[in-house]
Image 1: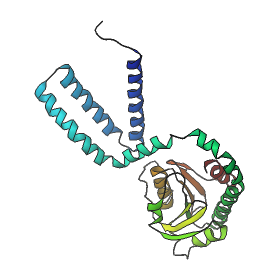
Image 2 (image 1 turned 90 degrees about the horizontal axis):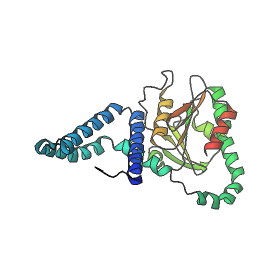
Image 3 (image 1 turned 60 degrees about the vertical axis):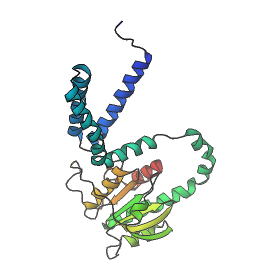
Image 4 (image 1 turned 180 degrees about the vertical axis):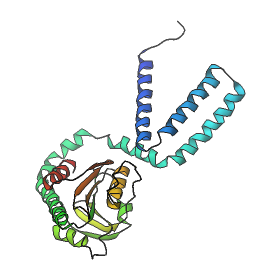
Length: 256
């Protein structure tokens, strides 16, 4: 035979296909699909010239371009690479650790429910009065860089405190509130704004900021619209709009 084809080769091909598919999805979400296609075309041409046609001069030139191009791609797509590595690490959950702390988690369920209800009641009250609000709930990824852009509060989660912070005459009402570890860490924080063109045009800057933070990490962003009073949630770059208090409570309970 010209070459041997075994089980290792099948696994090799499947792993490469899986890697390329994951990179394709990542590039598609970040609107860099054309760049991905261009890179793949260059790689195919490079392999064809250097391996099949064995053109030494052109092959050596393309080899140099590849070695320099890798550094250029890392600089150009540093945010996408960071997101890729974070998503990769986020899937590596150790099941036995979750089971080990199951008893401890069950003991704190009532406290978690009370915390969520304070947030839900505050959002419901602000929704009725059409008071704009943006609340970011930290999960696995730390939000220390976001907290540093606002004013540190470090207080217990309380419905009245949340409503007072987002009151229209409050100096902190325009920024985002960050909740971490069952405490209000900071308010008046600045979030990265999403430039996704798929966001409906009737949604304002608060919604774009909520989308931006949800695209960069696993945080949950809750928005109360100042124009309509509608409650929305952004998770992993996706919006859930026009939520009722019951639906908001269900989402937060499930996600947190």
